[in-house]
Length: 123
Image (tube, rainbow, N blue to C red):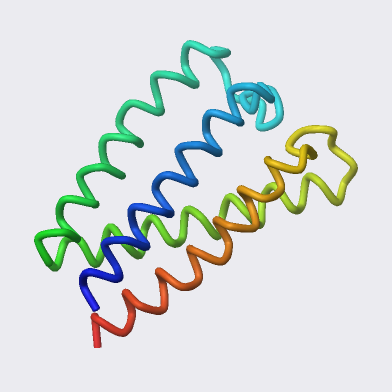
């Protein structure tokens, strides 16, 4: 089951990082009223991407810390889907391309699956 979780983590991490690239295109810092513009937005992504990648190594090595990071990544994917769905339903123009929506839906499915597999390994 660990190998399956490793692949789910890798896929979900890839989807979320791709979503963040899409977020830069849509100027997400304006959507969420973050200070500092693109510079701050980029800087906060350095530790985020570092921890996504670190978590992957922990999952690969079947570390208990990897299970925690897997749950965090799953929750992050669910959060991204819910927040952007909320903004889409409010009529915001961002993230309306077919690819943007497909990434969000794939993130939802992968995050739910990853969360269930992770919880199964925790019990």
